[in-house]
Image 1: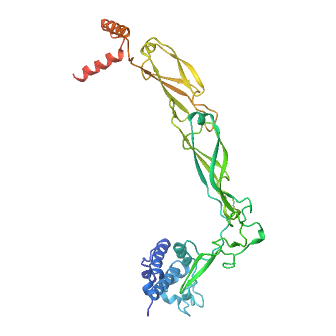
Image 2 (image 1 turned 90 degrees about the horizontal axis):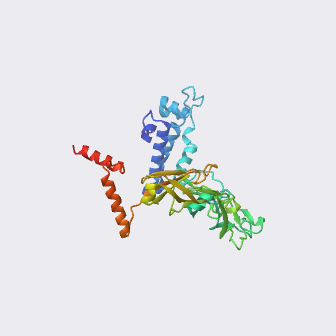
Length: 382
């Protein structure tokens, strides 16, 4: 019976790229996998062979060129056509070697190709520890003691899994490969060795403390130095302080994730700080001195006469130190003029007298913003 056209077998055009051919092959190979065709394994295996044969021809530049020129005749015994065929043509090609294409599809199915090897000692996992700091601690830097539950190297066997190095021997099941092959008719499936679990080695007399794991669970206490200037989202890496690795492998790293608590007075913006300074109407009108807080104590701030709400004063170098240098941020003080409350009778009389004096003065020079606002309102209403 005549063979089906290779392009038709894979469902691609003659102008298809190698990537398109490979994609079509993988899709069809999965479709005709025996595990998905339990009711008709024989037909599925035959289809898979056809798909694989087409793929191996169309992804080999020399074979594809011969096929495009001579069709299936290019691979018949004794065919000598074409300069690249040679005296014997491509005779003997029909058996197929089951090369990388076959490995690729099984890599997709089972997570690895042929010829696996024993797992190397696996590095321990990285860990994360969340630490919460006050703004003062973040700005100045601080040392903190933290407790981290993790896997540590067994102090009895020192990570070997046994007290004697001679008790670690090559696995007899996989002969050190870490994998075994399971055959099902046409297919050979590679799996992790069930005896050594991919390590290629087994422990004859496991350590009694760690039961052959080479590590034990423990809560360890560490001292962490937090540099000045850290902020929420910064991470500090402690090399080798993560989980201990298997089979004596290196430990992972510990990442300390910083979170800075909101502050009752200051609001942080990068290396700068902001705070509100409430002042009474008399100080705002006449001017004077007021004490304002900084992270390093109080300082005196001069309030000019006639200061309005929203006025901002900048105190240089009173912010937070830069994490990546010696530069200091600034402190921005935002003035809020308070309306007086809980007035005594005398205070009310004084304010009434002050208000009457403003009305008596027709120049409106005491409230320039008020006059400007109502002038705009008049224009708005025409």
